[in-house]
Amino acid sequence: MVSSWLILQITSLLCSALGLPNWTLKAILALLLVGFGAALIIGWRIDLRAARLAAAGSRKRSRKVHLVLWPAAAMLIVGGTTLVFSAFLDANQMFKPPSSELQASVPPAESGTPIPDIALTDGTHVSVGEQEILLSDKELGLQSMPEGIGVIENRSGRVRLLLGAGYSTYLVEGTDLKHLTSLPRLVLGPGEPGEFDNGAAQVFAVVRSNSRLYAFYQAQDSEGLPANTLFGVSGFYLSIGLAESDDDGYTWAKKGQIIRCAKPKEWAIDPHQGGRGVGLPGGLADASERHFYIYYTDLSTPQGGTGGQICVARCSLDDGPPLPGNWKKYFQGDFTEPGLGGRETPIIDLYASGHTGARYARPTYSKSLGKYVMVFNVNQAKEWADGLPARNSGIYLALSDDLIKWSGQVKLVSNYTQRVLGKSISVSPTILFDQDDKPSGWMIYAYSPKLSTAKLPNLGTPTYMVGRRISFEKKN
Image (cartoon, rainbow, N blue to C red; front, side):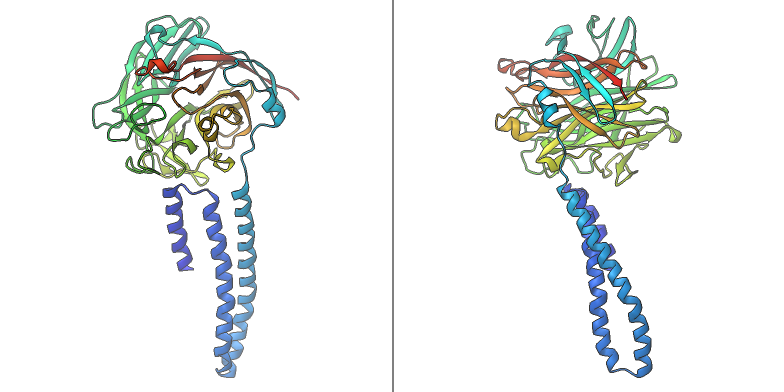
């Protein structure tokens, strides 16, 4: 029993360090239970031999003990066998992509075709309009956008957003999303050399608590890492930082790093892995406004950055503001691990479908549905690597009642979601409702028909901001 406990502790650490699938620990526990039951039976046989040489009184006492060992061993073996079967089912459970009917209704990459109706499993119907340009490349002087969107204000006749563009964050204003006309104002930029955000600071969510605004941003450490050859830029180690504003979002002060990967910057599946850490995030305050949630993708996995999965961390406002040290990662069923370096258990794990990654999870709350709505990207590396159509890759949507279990996953847009020079791409989706209680709004995302960077403009176009009208209707 002591040996089994020690083995489980070591296995738990190795599962986290090596990014092994969730069923691994269950399988080890099953083998230990079966093995312990077998050890009891073998021990009984050995003891029986010794008992034959002992006194008659000793044999009687021994038999009484043996009568207890038999059902205990049987229960352990049956329980262990059940766990083995359960682990086998977990290992073979495949992520279910959209049905063939739904796949047929999804437009091919770059078509911009609207989808009039998608029926979800709970009776909710979703419709998606055609793709429209909201901010073209270099419009308002911005490029490579939107890396993220944080909403400060969204009401009739006035919109104020924090927009991640390039390696910085800008305050953008206008009358609506199609008329963002004021000159952008730089509010957050990369930190100093040696800091965790020395390469980039891109806001992806803004939440309000009393008179203060908190902005969560993707921080990028670009020092001492190999080049990301797929995208043609330097490598990066991602984490998540916090900024605070007390003047309604016009100026911001950085408050430090709040979520960091369990693996250090130096860890990589191979020496050439350019993208590491935890990032590609989204966030929101829950309906009770008592908790902040941040969803992020773990890139430091044995499958590499293309196989990362979606994880979540939470801060309870009952314990104080969302400052460094107040965040807990979701791990094995509860928020128990520290935000800075703790372990995580994915809440959306698509690796079983064949080296498929999930990323850019962006949740919001729909008052009209009474549910949380999340859009996210699915990345099937084989598709873009082999020049195949984006059958699995694209923008997906899911619903949740508790921000942990997400159901009804359907595809809304087909396109590649890995940044590869010269390939088409649709990434970083966000839903922005017209008003909090309205069932319709915009699904905004970064798009390029042929990806390039500002330093390599002849290859194509850096990502620019597009959108589709999206609406929800609950039907019986």
